[in-house]
Amino acid sequence: MAVSETIIHEAAVLGTSVLVGAVLFLLYDLLRIFRRVVPHGTVWIGAEDFLYWLICTGAVFVMLYQENEGMVRGFALGGVVVGMMLYYLLFSRLVIRVNVLALQAVLHVFRRIFRIILGPFLRIVKKLGKFFRKELKKFVRAVRIGLCKL
Image (cartoon, rainbow, N blue to C red):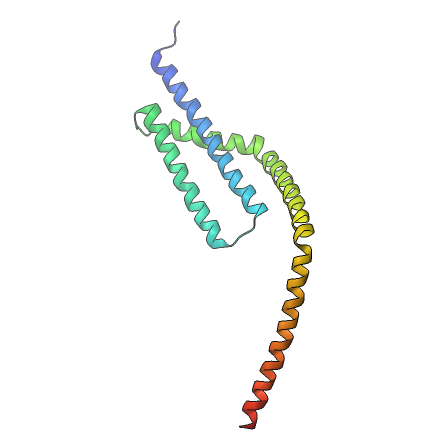
């Protein structure tokens, strides 16, 4: 008994939607890794999430348009959700843990190199800052005394 061409096409659409869901969650994991390595405020997090969801919308639209002539089918959207859940349950923790540790190690090495190269310069800048702060305090005190005598 031969499987009809329509069923094979629908199975391919389901497989593609599962794969798209996994790739979209991998993209979100990359965003999470970036957030852990480079902490930043809520405004940037909101902007990143907005951009992520725009990309997700575009990816799902392109997938539906190419695979199913633009028809929104429940099983295709369900396949995206299943792909996301499978990726999350099977790979997400490992991907985040390994990449965060690797990036933190690389950044630690760069910080040490940066401190070795720029350390003497930073010490000079710090001493100059202390000197100018002290001189500015003297100047402010002299101005206050002068104003009080008026």
